[in-house]
Each structure stands twice: as C-alpha cells, then as structure tokens.
Image (cartoon, rainbow, N blue to C red):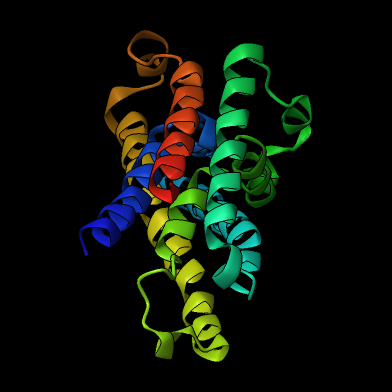
Length: 217
C-alpha cells in the first residue's frame, strides 16, 4: 500500500512539475489571452487545449502497455528497460541542450497538436512509464488475479486514471501560474523571476529513470 500510494503521488507531483514548466506551454496561454484583448476566456481555452494534447500524449504511450499480456511474464524486464530509456533521454538532453526545431513551426492556433508533440519529444510521457509499470506490477497478485481477462480489464482503466490525474495536476499548476502572470504578475515576471528549467528537467528524467530501476530491482 505504501509503494502504491507513493507511485500515485509521483503521478500527481510529476503533473504539477510539468504544469509549472514553461516548456509545457502555459506562457502560450498567457500570450493568447493578451493578444485577444486581455480577456480571460482565451486563456482558459488555451489551457484546455494544452491539457487535451498532454492527455492524448499520455494515452498514446501508456495504452499499448495496458494491452500487453507479456506484462505478466516480463514485467520486471519492461520496467528495467523503461528506466534505462528515461535515463538515456535525460542524459541526452543534459549533454546536448538541444530542442527539436520543428516544434517552433507548429502555429499557436494548433495548441492541442503542439502540446501533444512537446509531451512526447521532451520526455514528459516517458517520465510516467516507469511509474505506470510500477502500478501495473503483478508480483504481489494472488494466482486468481493473474487471469488474462482480469488483468487486461484492470490495466485498460489504469492508464486512463494515470493520464487523467497527471493532466489534472498539470492543468492546476500551469493554469494557476498562467492566471497569476496574466492577472497580477505580468510578463516581466518571466524575465526577472523565472529560471531556466532545462537542466532541472534533464536531471529529473534521470532521477525518475533511476528510481524506476531501483524499484524494479
């Protein structure tokens, strides 16, 4: 129960972290509202589009795992592999410092597509894979619960819950910050008070991947 609670808390806190990270798009929501006459409605519409794109990206990666009957037999190997992939992506971002240039060519009017692509290429979704596989672990289930039909039914709902909870946390964190910047703090807050999260983002990927390896082992 302690491990399961910790994993669900990791889903929430990673969502809050993604929401606060400007790379996930909340400054675009502020920009959209400012460009349309300082009205609040465009702000919330943009935040909704960003959340939808993020949610869809979660499902694209997590849903295939829920349909894998091999998860029963190779669950530990999958968790180890996922942890190594996340660590590798974190190291690449840390050492290269590069951002995919094609993201800059997606117009702001397509926020759902932009958010979807950013969540994939920046590793936001991959960060959740070790956590999700930990929630799917089967070593503590009794034999009666190892029936494939029961396992698939349980695991098909799990990615929906993980994606929904994570996206809700992201929307609350990013939306609150976007609203504060839009209403009270102003754009100067970004230039004077904010800091570059690139290194922290890469280190967080490495940290999550390492924790995934630790719990798998």
